[in-house]
Length: 359
Image 1 (spheres, rainbow, N blue to C red):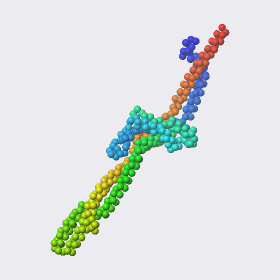
Image 2: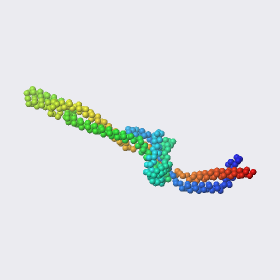
Image 3: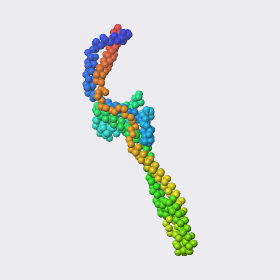
Image 4: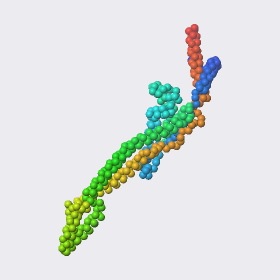
């Protein structure tokens, strides 16, 4: 077979001979593609754009102490956000929340086939990518443009919430430790205070400095009066002063405020007072730490910096109907040309074989 038989110029006569069938195939392809293109629903997509923040900069303790919120762009932050967004529990949460079983007409929840169909459809419509500006673009597409926008925004909120839980999960344990420390110090403080009160009642000491001055002054006065009474020979007065002095100085004296008990209890009271003061300072600090930790843990600090919310699309993203029709007709024409060319070559080969056999 000559090279001319394989040239493109040789196609035109073949097309002319088979033009009716070629036109019929292209026409049928065009009609079918038009029907399919008109049958396909319009698909709208909504996109949210956000930056992940550095989890260290969103630590509430740092913010309370004057730290600044810093935008993240680290690969680990981006990978963590994308992984959360593509996780199956997140997909199942949104599928239940937006009743996508009914929306996708997949069947009833709990059926394996229906569950797989909904998850596949949801994953196919979702796109989470890291763009060239170190931001994350979250796109969701659906025939319902309002649903696409609401679902994309809700997915951003879920990612933010889960990301906060991952970065702040251990803070609940820390808060429990703060609470235990505060409760322990409060119990110890109350127990030490009761011990101090009991010691004061036992030893009759309520103000160390004032009572020591009183006893010193009173002892000097009684001794002076006793010496004067003994010198003057007033025995009854001297006996009364001697009893008063014994009551103030002897350990077995009847006075509530007694020098012997005062000396005995001053060391104990000093120790109890120092212990109580130390516990009070630690208790105040522990309460402040617990209140700060509790307040900061309850404060919701977003781990994402939202640049653009997802809005309902004003134009469809697909299908491109004219491209479907033109593409199908071009493909059909190309396939038809290949088939008729092969058929012509086959017929030509058959004719030559028959001619050679007759010769």
